Structure formats: structure tokens, C-alpha cells
Amino acid sequence: MKTLLLMRHAKSDWNAEYGRDHERPLNDRGVVSAKRMGKVLTSKQFEPDLVISSTATRARTTAELAKAAGGWRAPIALEPALYGASSREVIQVASAAPDVDTLMLVGHQPTWSMTAAALTGSYVEVKTATVVVIEVDIESWAELDMGRLVEVLHPRDFTDG
Image 1 (cartoon, one colour):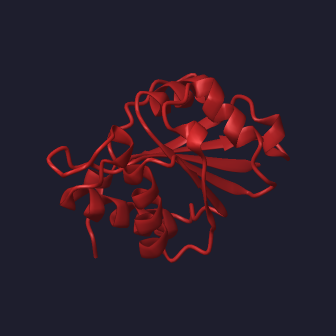
Image 2 (tube, one colour; image 1 turned 180 degrees about the vertical axis):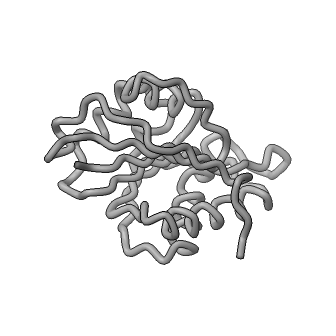
Image 3 (cartoon, rainbow, N blue to C red; image 1 turned 90 degrees about the vertical axis):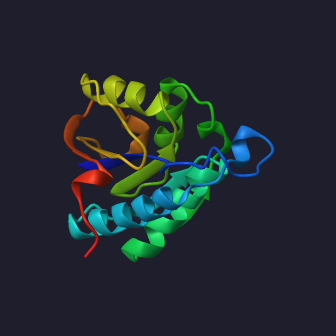
């Protein structure tokens, strides 16, 4: 049994100075939410063994803040293919992951809702900093197929403390 965590990047700052969309940073609320979700995942025992993030600034920063706040030892790998990916491409990235028990992918909408639906048959609205927890009965990520939607964690449902 393996666990896949799909985390959407936290709230970004549309008013910040940035060049391309790829470089858009998080806003203050996004920073708080990313840290909160790192702590939530640790407290719920969903700490990832590996994090693969989109290279977009807002996704990468979300992954880094969640890792630091949650105290995770998981390395963060950056994957350019997750920026602008289709759900099929996301599944390909996950399928190529090394043999870890809990894998987190950090990326973007609408791809995360489509990927959750492709893997569970359930539509999930993946708002900013939301984490979708999916269990899959496989021994290797190369076997990734349909799984079971376990939980949808929204930052607004938790408080810091």
C-alpha cells in the first residue's frame, strides 16, 4: 500500500512584481497556509518520504515551507513537467518515482482536480494549499492505477497551534 499526496500550491500574490507566471510568488496568506499544511500532514501521519514539485516559484515555495514547518526529512525534487501538465503527465511523473511509501506532488489547478478524479473516480475541488490523500494498493509507483480517496485536507479547516 502506498500513499499519494496531491498538494496544490498555496495562495499566490497577483500584485507582486514578477516576470512570467512561472515566477509568481506566494502572498502572506499563502505562506501561512503552506506552513499550516506541513504541520497538519505531520500530525495526521501523512509525512511524505519524497516531494516532487513543479518548478513554478509558488509551488516550490509551498513545498519548501510545508517541509520546514512539518519537520520532514523528505527531499524535494523539482520537476518542470508538473508546470502546465495534464493529469496523464502527472501520473507519468508519479509512476517514475523511486520506491517510497508516501509520495507528495506539488502543483497546480485544474490539473490536480483532474488527476484526483482520474485516480479515484471522485471529483475534488483542490483549492490553494489543499492536500488530496489517495491510497493505492501497489508495491511500486510504476504500477500506479486507481486508488481510494482517503481525505481532502483544506487549510481553512485547521488552525495553527
